Length: 140
Image 1 (cartoon, rainbow, N blue to C red):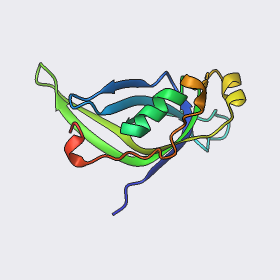
Image 2: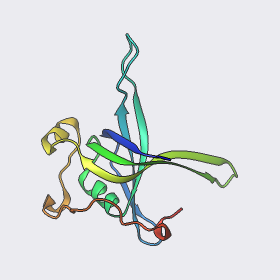
Image 3: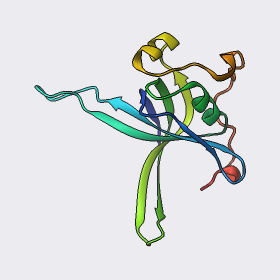
């Protein structure tokens, strides 16, 4: 079986970094991906895909990407459910990001509306962006 998602698009808003109860970094964001085809006479449609990343990948995304930034991600598609306080069941499908990549230069990103100005000057860019997660640390 194979579950692999690869996306290239723009962030729809600034990534939201938070921590789990055990202190693991987690970031949520949405990527706008324009479809590669359009019906004749119609404009291309855009899909807005929810993404989640953990640990080093979450820290990297929250530090170096902002609203409007072009980002490349790869991961897997995951569906989860939960019941709200009224007992209503909710479903969400999202990409669990394993790796995130720069897709454009700072100058191109700034022209498109993203700031891409790294916190701390960027000299300490991590060499390994993949999560070092174990199943015991994940919140679900």
